[in-house]
Image (cartoon, rainbow, N blue to C red):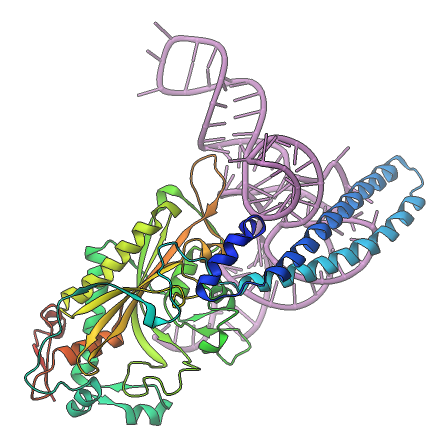
Length: 425
RNA sequence: GGAGAGAUGGCUGAGUGGUCGAAAGCGCUCCCCUGCUAAGGGAGUAUGGGUUAAUAGCCCAUCGAGGGUUCGAAUCCCUCUCUCUCCGCCA
């Protein structure tokens, strides 16, 4: 949610900023609603003040034993008027609210111009893709040849966009997750958290998935309103909702491993081969909760923490700055890490690191107190994958493949697999 | 799943229809007094919104949430949520 004060006082700048994303802010509608809200709210509050005064007067008159009948009569007529005002104000407020909940975050000035992912800007690359003296296979061919990746079994159980893994591959994914968690907690100062995988609508509204992106989510068919989390960002960031944190308690850095569930509606035909795009995948997520002045630096730090994982795994990758048209709804700036996949001969997203500024904090009312005598202010929130385990597994398979179809285990993972250095059929 | 109790400001805890946004205590902040690691006196100390140059005033809202009754609700009624205790069940 954008700062409502800014929307009122600095609308032109806001509209121009949102236009960079290709978002057309309904300025006329907003100004009209806002003007109506203002007068209506003032009138309503005035009526209420009058009612309060009269009620007090009635109480005092009654205490003195005076006749209160005429006073009561006057109150009756004022009551209907107040009620009408109340109702209209509630309508206007609801309209304004839903308008505002659908508006994406403002972009940071450093976000490059552009419309789609084709306009993203490569910032740096790390390492160079290895040359194979045989034809590199993709993870599907490798996994099926190993007999450890089974899409047929998965589709029998759950349909398309699911995978079953067995043996070495299943263990390898677990090792990756374990390694990532250990690295972030032991070397990068994160606190590991375990969180619910089912969340309520308020949490999703807090991080920005709702109300606009309900189609991307899996809702539980139950009288209780649960959704499966699309990312750990949702439960982890919402841990600070409706709180006022003391300055001394900040910054917070959390890491969580969770499965993620995405409906992938609207991605028909995209990445249908293999497990690049699944309804269910494992991810290690990093979340920072910081004072506003620190969020720019925190984004760089968080990104470097995700990079450290790929470096330790010796996977070639590049860092791109998302362009204006590609930055997500809640973010004001995003870096993507893209890992090299020999099977596809291209870089694919494996981590997305975003600074959401105060956008999510406003939605969930997560605040901090800058100083003893100061009022609470919205915090800044950041999140990033550190990294997506399913895609990390694919990257390891494809980059570490041998001519015979076996897969070498990256050095840092070997201790997690009982010293094993190769995955074989 | 069954039975019961509860939810008030940073904390403890009063308050069952009328100057209650809320006593008191604790904590915290500032000032005064005091020559000393103490005590005493005074003032202040919630959040959101509106208005405003203003985190100065003033106004509105908020006593778990949402409805209702009433001229008036922390107080009465209804629904829901959560917490605690006991029993049952389970990982």
